[in-house]
Image 1 (tube, rainbow, N blue to C red):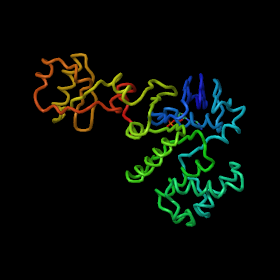
Image 2 (cartoon, rainbow, N blue to C red; image 1 turned 90 degrees about the vertical axis):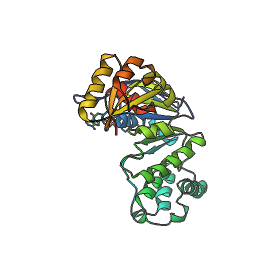
Image 3 (cartoon, rainbow, N blue to C red; image 1 turned 135 degrees about the vertical axis):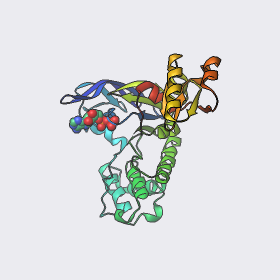
Image 4 (cartoon, protein in one colour; image 1 turned 60 degrees about the vertical axis):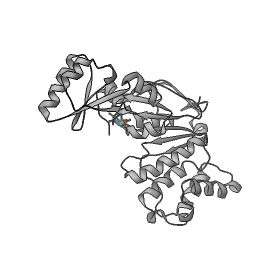
Length: 300
Ligand code: ADP
């Protein structure tokens, strides 16, 4: 087990940000912690690094109880913050060297460690550029590389692609995929369904400070959203009518932009489908359907 959390609680005044959290992450897996804004994902990350101290509960990271042995745990884990806090006056290489030193990579191994991290982030040919001169995407890759310079066994990524354009997001996804193939344990918080769906072996859906569902994307789809959804399009009165008929039959719907999606459509009775009429567009169930079915909320 790379990390184990039992009954963690973190309060900020009247707000309970983490509310009895249980979480296990097996070594070598990539777990996506998926939840809407305010679910408690960042607070969970801070508890794991002992940047915040839990009011209750037990946390063990790489075998070390946290916060008691957080220093030892931190030495073996990489942390990639949500905010870019690179030193803009330094070059890419210098940023990594500073961290290699901070993480006590032995002096004779430091150069190789920095080169490895630069290569992983595909920044070898920009190594001597000041951070100020790097593009937004390069800076994000460097931020991740910085968290990897000491070859950690566990990497925590807090919303790694929040606010980035799609191309940069793709680049970071490739980088995270490489980590997975190297056997590094990854815990990634995200409110992007697609990110969890693509990268995570295992997804924990978080809402109001606790985990409300857990499984692979395929397991979660099968359990909470079935196989297929069908979408009905039309003007608002038509959509309202679809919702009314479907709900009357005891089935669930969700709004999907200009359409209404009927969930678990594989079990729709034929007379209902006849009553709803033509124009239904079937599609496979998604993790987004799962999320809405579980929380009633849209994410992203
Ligand atoms: P997420 O990362 O899922 O968006 P957070 O962990 O940031 O969620 O926040 C969970 C809840 O805790 C929110 O209601 C947030 O406003 C509150 N919260 C988080 N950090 C603090 C803090 N330092 N002080 C007060 N409230 C906080």
